[in-house]
Length: 332
Ligand SMILES: [Zn+2]
Ligand SMILES: [Zn+2]
Image 1 (cartoon, rainbow, N blue to C red):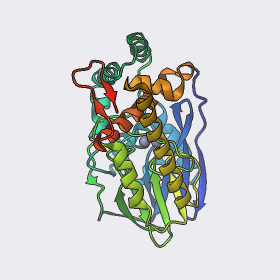
Image 2 (image 1 turned 180 degrees about the horizontal axis):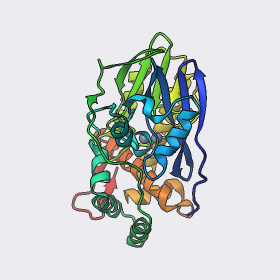
Image 3 (image 1 turned 90 degrees about the vertical axis):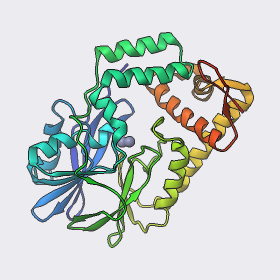
Image 4 (image 1 turned 60 degrees about the horizontal axis):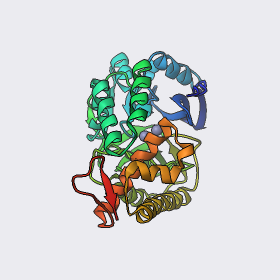
């Protein structure tokens, strides 16, 4: 697989006291992610951190230096959700500076990955096997991972404060309120600053929607995601600060776009199942992506999305797992 081009960190002032830190991500197709640094007195509140791992703290320091600060100025770390590109450096920053980490209480989904990466890999391979992924492909994936383990999270740390509605985050641009927006991840929150009409939207709402549902932690992540779009819809927002890509102005259009994409996706899974009569999740992935376009990385990504759609169709009474099938088969 081709290495992702490593982008250098680049910092951009969005408005007085607000900086976008564009930090490199290690994944092909996702070259960078954003952290948002906001001034608070002489220090900073950092919303999201970028991935952890060797040299990443130095990378963050280089990004902060472009705003005239350093990692030692971070007084509080706030994470929109517990994915490695948003909380990977949280433990290192908090240890180094003594500052607190605020994150949603449902952050456990990252715990296994950090504390027992081999166990997490085996769990993922078992999901693949049960979904009908060919054993040869799973073996290849296991070998690749063994040769090149991912170090994307610097240890795990329970939040010092649970980010729940009612918690307020103080910065010089104003006080931010917390909105629970599970779906993309069970721990996802968005933060809203009503006077400046700003929203930190994490991966819930992006400028170019890329849907992803962290599968297997809750009964219906797809349904949660749709409900979470309703949570942010009434908020008055002039500028949205997303987890990836540039800030954008028209959140209503992006919400409509995310809804449409999600509905299209569900329809493709529904149709795939109707056409096949009965199928494994992986057969549906092949139908959606096309067998010739399947790549190990993207197949795993699409598989999680298809599994989330199947769970949602099951909740709606439109699909059901075939009893005693192994790999798991589904029928309309
Ligand atoms: Zn994420
Ligand atoms: Zn992300």
